Image 1 (cartoon, rainbow, N blue to C red):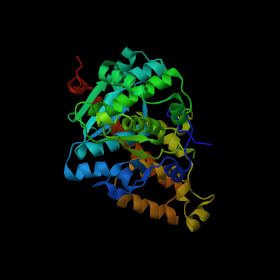
Image 2: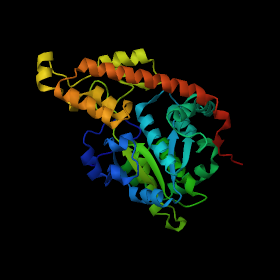
Image 3: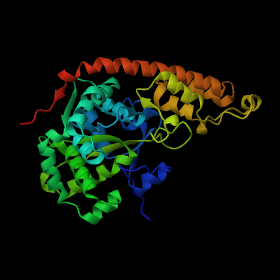
Image 4: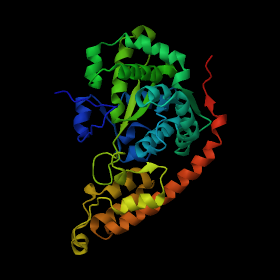
Length: 362
């Protein structure tokens, strides 16, 4: 049976190695790009498609773009969004023309959020949040899906290039809303190439890979247009604090949102699954089982930038010198500092929104 990765569902990926094989992804190595960021260095970024094209653009200083979207529905974002922004910011710093699309049409179709509500949510929170996480407001181009008629027109053209059975093979089923949403996203992914053909990279969570595959299929059937097939970069999920493979809003007690009261987050961290032993004596003797420790994973993926600092914690915890309680205390302090910094930057960038570079459509 063919495995379906569903960007609209909640199926979890347990075996990343198998996924790489099943979907023909390229294994990511930190040496692919210059000065890899934290999640690239630590194996959180694990796969991609056509990464050498982007590496060549960076090395030779040739034009390329990086793009991601905002779904303006929730009053909070999550740590997966944070990793996408960190990778976008990495490519932005290495020369990418950076686009953020606000998927207000998709929010209206899939979540029942009106265009006006989606617009207000994006301007008040989501866009400032992405800037607070590291995007350069002066180097980022924004647009609203509903205003971009070129994308909508292209979606209709793209829809003619794929059959119903092919769509079902990628997405699992093919209800009309899903089809319209998917082909519109194809237009979004290729939009930066409408004026100038150039390579582009889309950093995403693995659940968004169907959109990449559909776009690449359609590009291959529009050879006369000479689009570059989009490259992509995939990060692993941040595991839930209870040990599940992915943080989920359905488990609010084990999920960390942005922003969130640091005191509430610390309570969650205190209850998190750790790799500590049953007794202190056993822990001192045998050390922690770090592979099972969700708090260390949080430090590794999100809270400690310096590799030497992380290595020191790893060695002390692995040897039993550091206890689970001490590790949780470090995570609480780091998370409190991060949340306070994020909240301050969020307020600062709310004032910047009116001066951002939004595409103006006639």
